[in-house]
Amino acid sequence: MTQHQPLKVLYLSAEVVPFAKTGGLADVAGSLPKAIHALGNDIRVAMPRYGRIDVAKFGLKEAVPAFPVPMDKQLEEASVLEGALAPDIPVYFIENSKYYDRDGIYMYPDDAERFVFFCRSSLEMLKRLDWCPDIIHCNDWHTAIIPNWLKTIYKDDSFFERTATVYTIHNLAYQGIFGYRVLEIAGIAEYGFMYHPEMADLTEVVDFMARGIFFADVINTVSEKYAQEILTPEFGEKLDPLLRDRRDRLFGILNGIDYETMNPATDKYIAQRFDVNSLDKRVVNKLALQREAKLQENAALPLIGVISRLTDQKGFDILGDVVDHLLNLDLQFVLLGTGDPHYHEMFSRIAQTYPGKAAVFLTFNAELAQKIYAGTDMFLMPSRFEPCGLGQMIAMRYGSVPIVRATGGLADTVKDFDPRSSEGNGFSFAAYDRWALFATVVRALENYKYRDTWRKLQVRGMTADFSWNASARKYVDLYYRALAARGKETKLEDYGVVKK
Ligand code: ADP
Image 1 (cartoon, protein in one colour):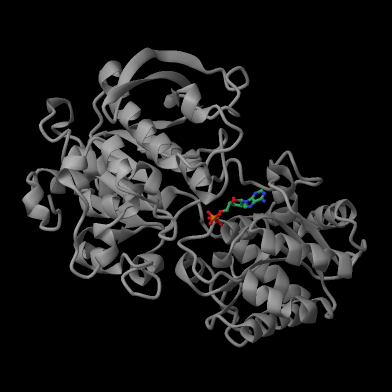
Image 2: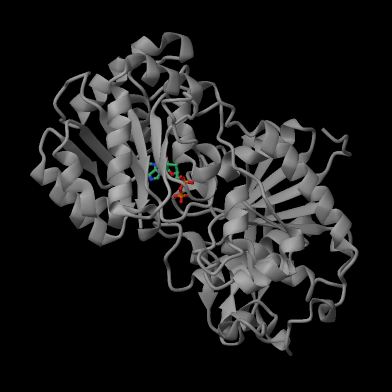
């Protein structure tokens, strides 16, 4: 590893485990900062204090009393509570009851305003804490306005003189697209819309993701494969021309998982703890899961699990096309997920049609998720696209063998098993096609019959290193790259694509 000076990093995320989670972003935000801290850096996290976050349970204390935050032509009030991700990793919670005292995290009509407020308050908070970070690390559209601000309204602010920005794309499909009004709220109306010759839409909407990509000192996404894929129209979600322009500063860094909390040897939610040397005990979890899910209790039947947001991205259309054929085979199926009502209906029907064989939980349940990772034989992710995917890595850590479509991070982490050479750690297919999915499940079932082969696959997954060790170092390198890039561009004209 390169020897580095310790850095001061503010890490911003709309969701952070254990405080608020809807998907993988929260896992990353709850674990990557720990790994960056372990490398000797002063990293601190900021997120909104959603109404559901229990102040007493997490021991949150006041860090900054109420202060004014510019929003449009008014001043709103923010205050900051402080908790911790781990000793010496503070988490700053931005408070404002009007914006955050609600049941959920997102999907409100004023989301743009809510996250602009979060970002602006975070920057203003830093001044009140008198803590000036070297790096502001922004994640996804919710925090993408910050690089834009540092190159416009905060450009001449001496407090941020040396601060560089890193923008991480966790999922290009969620860009945060809003109307002109947002520019006024964010105080950047005078700069107008963005302009790009190949992206006509940009002159009519405020696309937060595009702004993060455009203004950040460096950009990355969460696997090497996805970093390449998003340069193409197929995966670029209409931002590929901009990404191609910025490819000199676009990197792919594979996500890791938290090896402390995701550990079958210590997991408090599962019926039987186990590790790679006591894999025989694992069957207790399978039987417990079958009982809880009201599946036929049978250790020999292969049990396939899915844990996912129920959206088109995750491949549920092709799964829906073959699920009846699959359930006519000798296997069991358990699904945990929430999302599109259309998929809720589809999987409810499956559960009703195949009692004892298929179980469906249409909720978000972190505890049940661990039981499924620990109790299934196979874990299915037939994604249409997948920036990184954490499910397949958690599954492997828990001895459940992944069956995936080879795209994005799934392609980077799961190598298709070849019985001739005995290489591979799971099963994968390339074409986004129902029969390719079906054939791959059948192939997994065939191999499941050979106990030694199966054990080898499980051991490979469990002993692979999907921790943050390697990737955290890559992020620190990225931070240094951002600092180096920072001084070079100070004038808006240098970007060449902003129209007044
Ligand atoms: P994404 O970020 O696209 O949702 P990932 O695979 O990167 O997908 O991460 C998903 C994370 O959310 C995993 O930790 C998975 O276990 C968890 N998860 C998804 N749906 C549920 C659910 N319904 N209940 C509990 N955990 C879930």
